[in-house]
Image 1: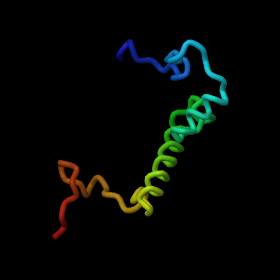
Image 2 (image 1 turned 120 degrees about the vertical axis):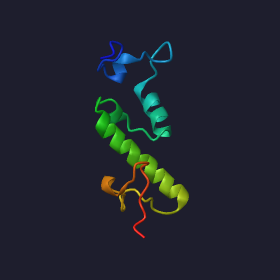
Image 3 (image 1 turned 135 degrees about the horizontal axis):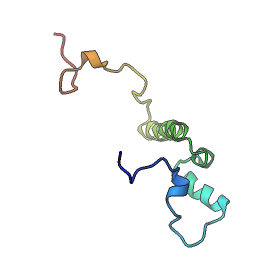
Image 4 (image 1 turned 180 degrees about the horizontal axis):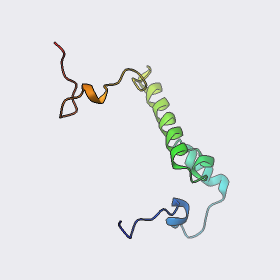
Length: 91
């Protein structure tokens, strides 16, 4: 195991990039501009944060494209992939 890697939550691992901490409302505004749910970010639950962030970003992409994404539609299963990860033709 790498001794430099531990399981310290991010809010305790990195010091703030400014000398004094901005008010929570200001920080929440900053996070909203990046489509980040401040409450989820502060729970130290990476999986919940990641799922919500992925959905938010995908929503922005779909809105910009004007159509739904292919996320969640038919996907290639592992047994249909060749060695390079590309789908094999059945023709």
